[in-house]
Image (cartoon, rainbow over all chains, first blue to last red; front, side, top):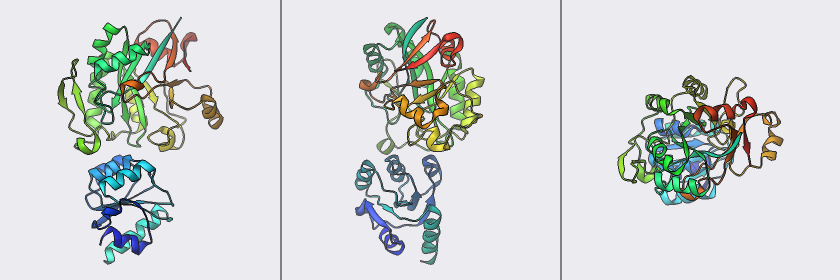
Length: 112
Length: 245
């Protein structure tokens, strides 16, 4: 399943990094602590968070994550979007909370 | 008593986000140009660049306080300053608890430790962006044990601050002072947080490049320049006090 498939299935908004929409998503990680993601997320995961600043993209790039999913209708800051375009890691968003979107992504990945 | 101009929060090239122009000499020249009397060298999660700057600063007539801006497990940035005798102990504490994620300089920034002529001695291998596996209270207690200075950094910043990460300042957390962001008008902070009005505040540059050194500073009203005297000043002992401008 690719980021594009997840976007379609979960009705997400694409903010940036659309060149990376064909990346495969092999799991998810939900956390708002950057150091936690740095230590515990692994390659190919979609990262669910409320953080919108550009350090998010440094971590996503370091860990080769497939996408960043922003919750609660939060939108990425301008420089965060630029970083996402440059790294070709999409930032997508939902109006749902972290709990809701994590559950849905989990179901989606397990049923595919 | 005297008034000393102090910028207690300055990064060097060792910090992954610090400009590579922040060599010991460039940093000290910028500090001298801005008329700073006291500077704090506070790289992210490392004290290693501070001693050479402290040694070189004597020629500039600048008093250097060693320390680090330590990231707690809750991702609160804390200025931790210690006397020269305790700098190794503070570094050992950081080394024991920091997460050892390898640094990727292309993605996260270079971390060179340099000598007095800006020659690279070595690169710190683990990312200094990481956090210590220690709570803010544990860090405070450790710094207190070293008779050091503990200051939650840029408390009104929307990320990596005690306010953004913990929601409020815990009643039982002791501190020597609080650091206000460089651009915050004091009145606006106190309007939002009236209970902080009688606390001791500093303002600093949080400089990552030479031109920002001294862009914000605190006037320390105290008798002379020493680590112990700065600690007394921040705690407003016997009419000493920090004055934010």
